[in-house]
Image (cartoon, rainbow, N blue to C red; front, top):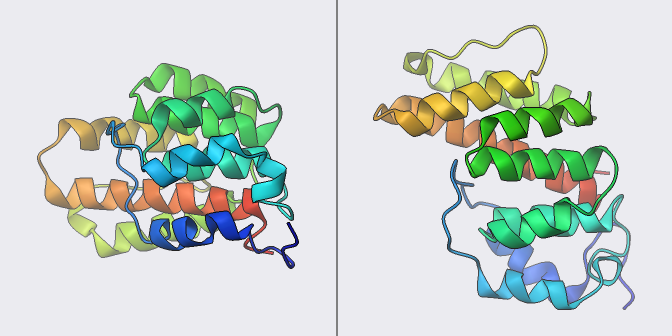
Length: 182
């Protein structure tokens, strides 16, 4: 399959287009997009021929599409920072915060952290009543605590802010893995 530059294989283009504006829930929903689930029948390298990390791009697309189990299965078999990052996000949504914190510990610092910090700062400015305060740099464990608070809260401003940051994190990581942000 011949794709140009960082464009995904045609089989994924419509799915990606649909998922680019989807809010990623803070907890697994059990609603897996059937089109996304079918992607596992193909090699990640064929779906994302110009990706930085095709397997990680697949794991991310599955997670964004609500295919929690499938994303977990793919992410746990990826060595390196991106596999650990998707694995951490999967466990954040389980929700199993201690396990997510463990996997984030294996990520270390990631290339998306500065962009994510900027996106989180914007979300916090848009939602001043959420009571969120960033530290001097991106802290995944702090985000995990915010997700726990939001899941236990009935405060729509907090839920909206944290969901927005979580969604931005998933989208930024997917874009990085797929090479879409080159």
